[in-house]
Length: 146
Image (cartoon, rainbow, N blue to C red):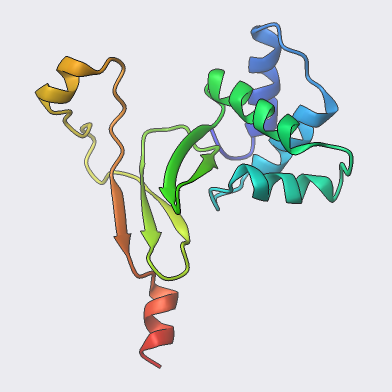
């Protein structure tokens, strides 16, 4: 859902589910719109306090949980045990640089879904496969070879 209509789409979803469109929620949504850096709640809080100094970290966490419930953001643990948030909710994977911890979206080259093993399907419901690639990004690789 990331992209040019993210704000409008999320506001519509909030209203459709009977949730209020508060200034705090709008500030978090605006921070996520077009944001491909996969920020943590703390990073979002720091960014939002520049324009909304009274927002608390708890409000940011609550807003992110609400946005996840309405499928406007995906959360995942990718680096350092920290939860990251991604406004891109279309199925995709992630690549993480071992050195700088940059996270990038990776969209499958084939149209088919990643198969879920039968052992997982038998023990979990509503499984969403996500592949995590770890490596060294081009910037870090070129820096170390210089």
